[in-house]
Every structure is written in structure tokens, then in C-alpha cells.
Amino acid sequence: MECKFEEILVHPNRLVIPTNLLASEEGVKRFVQEIEKMITRKQSTVRAGEPPYRPEVRFLVWPDGLRPYHLSYPALQSAGIKQKRQTIKELIKKIIKKIVKH
Image (cartoon, rainbow, N blue to C red; front, side):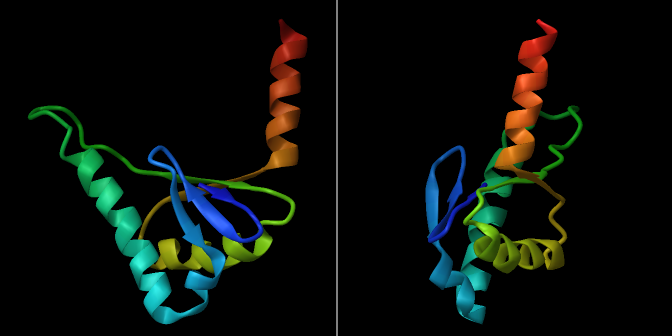
């Protein structure tokens, strides 16, 4: 998930969640339901005998995306969905470090 100023962009299907939707209880509920649907769809692709899919939502937080991050993170946390956060600055440092190694 990319947290930007006015929206959250949910990958891989590029679902756009406007930040103002997360300002209401009903909007937060819809947001969590959409994420749970994505997890359920992914879980349905696991074949018999394989370990279950272990979902983890990763947040990529742009400098202007703190508000949508702070609105969405607690909603997913209360739904029991595992999460990680990474800022753009951290991501760029990680990429540069990999490039320098090679």
C-alpha cells in the first residue's frame, strides 16, 4: 500500500482509497473489508496440502502520506492483519545500498 496525500493506493490491483473515506467509521469499515477480500482471494489460490498464505500488508509512506497512514494502520491492526511500514526515504537508502554492493 502506498500512502499519499489524498489517497492510499493498494497494490497489486491498484485500488485507490481516498483519504477522506477513512475519516468516517463506515469508510474505515469498507476499507478493511476490501483488504480482507483481497486476502481471501489470495488464500483461495493455496492448493491442498500447501501451507496457508500468511498475509502481510506493507505500507510505503510518502512524505505527504502520514495522515492516510495514521488513519489506515489502526483499522487493519484491529482487524488482526499483520503490517509493516517503510518510508520512501528508507526504501531509497535500501536500493542505493544494494546498488553499491554490486
